[in-house]
Length: 324
Image (cartoon, rainbow, N blue to C red):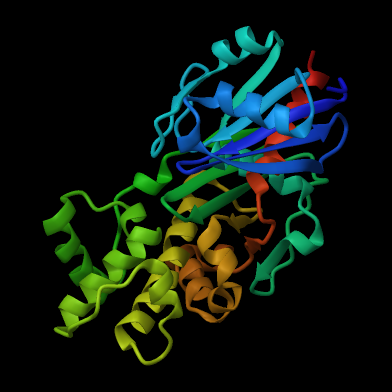
């Protein structure tokens, strides 16, 4: 492999997505998706990727992984793989290896997103990453609910990794309170993730059908979004989902001080940008009592780049080499 090329990856519960990036660049190439179930672990998958792409040892490896990273190790949440920095260093005999939480990687991608790779929700202009100091957040519903913040201090970027998706859900109206009571009987502790995710939308759908005492045919999250106006429970579920998303994103801003802007990531909202724009999301986001005037001035931005985790991993891979 050309020593200017770095190996990056984004590993989830089902897929491992790999690509190459050149030093000094923030755009990757040679992207390929492998099925995690086909490999014993990341080393075997990386070997296969390098074989298919006709390359040998990388100069550096940076992987975004769907799970909490502890001391350079991670057991993926929905995957049999274990990823260890030390094993990758020893096997590939390279010095520069980094594991990132998946939303940590997305956070690092935010400064390099181009204008075609995001959509502003509302009328507030996007933050300027040329400022020497700022704080932004990113929240994303998908299989779960991820969240991270990105701080820029004296020109240097620092990601704040969180497990904010597991914060307890706080209802803001009587319907949400009824929904919480129903879900508490099933789950005990009801986190934001149990409403703001694919399974979370399904939980909202079932709870609303019970509250309204209406028979609702069991549907997946995708089927709920695609069911159309004929299924009023599905319509109400989507409206509730997007309202709660605004509430939770607003809470995250207040909790982290991300007053320069907050981005929406994850696959769910990328598929339905117009629904998000026309929903109560922004109203719910701003509805923070005495801080409403502050919230009204904070931009909310939908990420439309298909794989920002790879983009962020590339940025970190480049920064590793600069620091050494």
